[in-house]
Length: 281
Ligand code: PAF
Image (spheres, protein in one colour):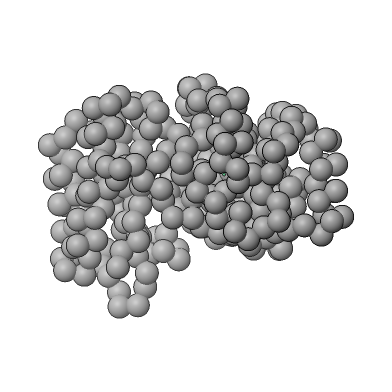
């Protein structure tokens, strides 16, 4: 596995792979890698000649400077995990100036309105920051395929819109949420939970599964009330729960006959913000 710490040496590598007509699969990350990330590379390995990981903590997608500061930076460990996985050919760890040569500005995107829903409403500017870094990484890596976890389902939809809007020839793949044994969705933030908090956070996925049982059995407002009641009695703060149409991510208050729906939840456990979602069927 090769590791590149600057744009120029990485560009030479990409040029050589392109000259050999190799297909490239990319899964971008911000590091603090866990089994969920590794599952992205397992998917990428199945359908690409070359699998690339990028590790870059992107300042422009943080709307809270404290969050950016606290974000775990574990590059050496991450590289070791990638090496041990035997799934990755090259890792790109760019410097800030490799991604933002003209200063740390976010581009502004129109993603058809989905950028204003849920996480977009809760974290202003977040998706412009994600779009900016992913557009730049796509330009530098020139992947044929790119892989994103469904845990950040809204981000996945945003990336699909980004590729469509820029008319890039990159196939975007959503990869199923990887969960801890107790159902908690894997996330780099989980390492900030205490053992007890990790155990109690199992309630998030348990609740989503209950929501799935209630799907088309009781009304959307009744489901919302029940979810709020579940978290009322807990040492966790339910930031939002909603059911949305999968295509528009607009919240719904009833289930129409032929749309696809997904439940979305954000819960704060101590000072750790956990997000999860489940397709309803
Ligand atoms: O999902 C992430 O880790 C980040 O948002 C991404 C896609 C790597 C962009 O910084």
